Length: 216
Image (cartoon, rainbow, N blue to C red):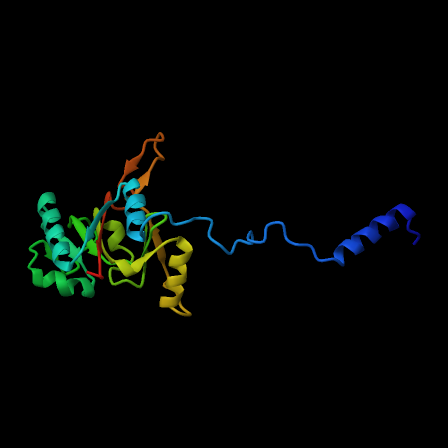
């Protein structure tokens, strides 16, 4: 097959260009680095800011004593007398405190309780999200069916971005992730009906995060 001089000239220039290394115009644009930068003093403040924007209630506690006092005050303010908690690690320090509203029997998911207390996997500061999974003692149903969800978390569970949370989950459950990983971002909400925002349709209408500072 004969190649015209003009086409041969183009192919020659292409071959010459390919034989010479050229510096990438954007060497840091491969997607390996996060485009989000942490501009706050700490992950606690960033999470509190983003979580509050989503109508979540954030309570920072410097000790377990402070956490128990705040939780008791919340229960009294809300007039709770049935709050479910199925997490042994939380019951270990909640039960001795003698909280009259605490129910450890499990109850049922039909709405005969006012709130549920659970732990979580991680907290995502950038989005104000709570990472939960089916591997937690509370299971899949309790955080969804509870009208009010109270999460007790620790400062070591804070991560900056979603990808950081997923990386931590892979480290925590090597080779076998839980069958369900849920990112809860504030109370349940929908605007399906005439574009009117309604809270508490598909899940809890209120979400509280009590963050315990382990360094104190």
